Amino acid sequence: MSSMGESAAPLGGSVASSQGGPWLPRRWIRGTLWIVAYVLLAAFPLLLLLTGPVPRGGGWAWDFAMALGFAGLAIMGLQFVLTARFRRATAPFGIDIVYYFHRWAALGGFGLIVAHYLILRLRHPAALGSADPRNAEWPMTAGRVALALFAVLIVTSLGRKALRLEYDRWRVGHAVMAVMAVALAGWHIRGAGHYTAETWRGALWTGYTALWLGVLGYIRVLKPLRLLRSPYRVIEVRAERGRAWTLTLQPMREPMPEFRPGQFAWLSLGRSPFRAGEHPFSIASSTTLQPAVQFTIKELGDFTRTIRHTRTGTIAYLDGPHGVFTPDAWPQAPGFVFIAGGIGIAPIMSMLRTLADRGDRRPLLLVFGNRRWDDVLFREEIEALASRLTLRVVHVLQEPPPDWRGATGILSPPVIRAALTPDVANGVCFLCGPKPMNDSVQHTLRGLGVPLSRIQCELFDMV
Image (tube, rainbow, N blue to C red; front, top):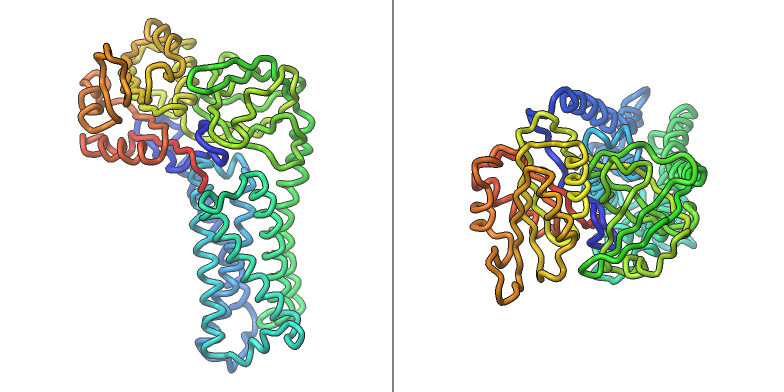
């Protein structure tokens, strides 16, 4: 992902190609196994209900409401797992897809919990008791508070930008409310005693809840401890065009694992990895520069506007690499098409620089959209790369200078159609830019007959 926003993270994902070689079949197999594991974990509470004696006399509405409640809480608890960034689990899909699924899974889990409450309210109101916490049983109050917290989590997550919630503070509040909501919901189920009255069932449910909170402990304690042992130092801060800055980081001890061109990492700059404040950015440098890494970041939000003030010597921490937005997944591809908008050029520069350093001679096309010519990032370097690669470059400007003879406007279907000449028409396409641009270009490529299996997208917004 690039630096288009404070919550930048790739969404939209990548789709496998039949030209990817043996790496992709292994990815499909591993992906299938992780999906099965997720389904089993989500279904575990329901299986628990069906094991051993089942309480009688509630009726179908009661049993259905209980099943919805268990399933909904299991899905909400698994959100901790989805956001833990386990590299092996996210590798088959890309962390972009995992975060996108996290968003929709949370909506689904919340919907199940709301349905659980509404069915009981309509069919078994006596079971809920008084809504007044002074008169209500504590498990019921815990359940109501958990439901309210889940609602606040959903609203503030989906509407973070509209509510103008600062990203770092929102992340801290989001984590605290999530822990409280899951803990209270688990307390509600354990205290209510329905289907968990037996000692062994209660112990299993308590252990299951502890598993979710244990994952959170890994995220907030164990992972930062590991990062603390592998600090980086900023060795260069370079101004670029268009209010962008390139940071070069050198590891002080053990570097992060080797990255593939186009991948990204979470960057904690000038602060402890235990503190909130990490932001995901695409790696812009060639893989041959490793163990040093470079990030090109555009001034767009509260955090990115501070990049210009970064001093050399600043300590940083990197959680990465992540992502499957990389040409290395397609070693047999006949060529590549890169379509970028603005700062979306960052991961593509990593790809172009790496391909040039490797001496790759496959046909390449870069279609690069910007507002003004003076804002075009890496303009001279792209021209130099074209002489080292079999690269054709098409610049598209929304506000061209008077003597401009190139393409103008946005990355429209006529522009894309004209650029896709036969030498690159069968290549794998990488799109990186704002979501409206990616959606439009992807629709255009599909209309031109490019199969979805050859279209790779990386977006910027997490929510």
